[in-house]
Image 1: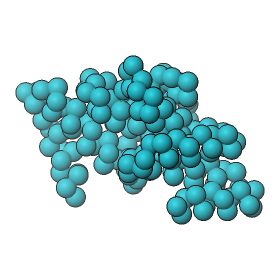
Image 2: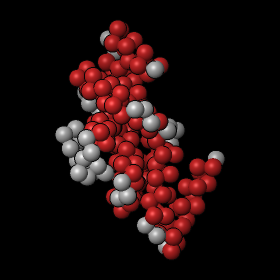
Image 3: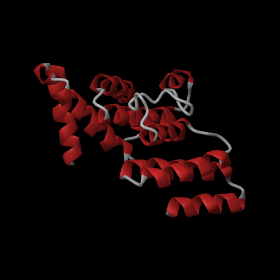
Image 4: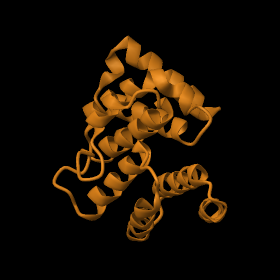
Length: 173
């Protein structure tokens, strides 16, 4: 709830950029921490109409929650009304948002056994990890990337074994 309070305080003093940061953080962390999806979608839809700009990670989270609630035909694919992963190729200069969005895509793929898709998103995110290394997204990426590698029987490939071992050491730390 502190993030919602920060959002409201930003509104009161006219700091729209702070409002955007707080609302995005609230929604994404609520999603990752397992907040009730029906409650979260209400919050997301309310905030969606109030944001001056809709960052890609907010849109990715919005699409993920919609896919989960509406029992989408292909819930792992975040291609929908609010987000499309191909949009990330057109977002230049905002690697923070791109990396955070890629983590959400990776999570959704592993949740629905699309391990090849998860690895594709993790591979795209790997060069951008400096933008997420200090936040919750980083261990989530490491966990889901490792899970996808193990699930796809990449254990026989030396490069994947090295990455799995490296990820596990980082997660232990």
